[in-house]
Length: 488
Image (cartoon, rainbow, N blue to C red; front, side, top):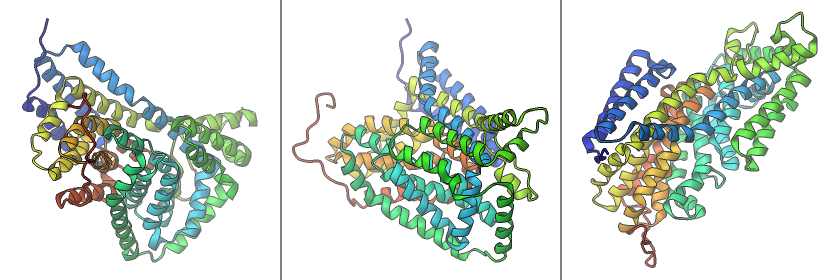
């Protein structure tokens, strides 16, 4: 019978260093296209390295395999949502919902404040429904389209969308991560939100200011003619009207009522199907392209194609064609591949004890209350990099560090805030993280391309670290709080 040996810090670092080296090489060789396959190979090969380290330490292949399967199983809801979002995008373009959002958005949003307005709009909706993914998959798609129509940067727009969406998600009592972090830390959600406001509100103010400065300093001359042409083409290609916004309202309402994401997106997709059938019939028949089919069957075929293979625009404007030729479940396959590879790597790291060893190594550097909070921030970011999932990045460091915060006489809200200021907000900045992969696929902008402009998502950890360094708003533990027997 093999005896399992506890991994050393060097053991734990070997697969991580391997992964970082391979990912850096992938980015060097393939640039923003590295998530199309190169990153997946890097993750799988690094998982193999972690397996070899685990086997060397006495772990059995069966245990490692079970760890991978368990980790991949955690990502199943995200994968289902990804596929359904692909269908939603295809049907919403076909139905005219996305074109209508672009059409009206062009009329309302001025280029000078477009980035700041996009951030604010996404923040408000995410705050009300508690889902950054839903915001990106609905408003985000339209805002990217408006930016392209205006000739603005889609990379900056994606950064504004993600900044606003994650601020709202992070501060909403209806968000799953906002409920998970205080549960792991051992505090209540409203104390958690109040404590988060100290770092989160200044961060979004800074981000909004940066987006406003960028918008006011850009050259927007000559855009009026292009926008008028785009509006005319949209009105010609689709039967544009405010009634086409119904699928968007359906999704927002269901999200507000706390219906789970998967059925919400499915019902939003079906709402798009109904709108396409009722209001865009000619476009559907043209999409099917089958003269030998009756109109009802051509309609069904067109809707079916939109759900699995997306919509293909055929206008006189190549930019508009590129903008509207999107969606379908098939468009998400590469992203699903990336998530599976990332979760396999994270599963091996956890099953072989390498991830816990990394976290223990970080704990050895804790010398004060400030360093404990900063270590938590680093742990959350590191767990996002290693495990590829924001939920694991909240749970693992939170579970391990909860006792340390008690021993340091720090209230649980300090831990829950640090977990959200790191694990939640940095998840979309990692290309192989479920959140980063989702945002890149949904918005059509590579993670590394929008990363420099997702201001809120990296300003927030820095602000949180600054609070810790200067001992600002680190609440002490209540005097009557004691360690439970399980925590001693």
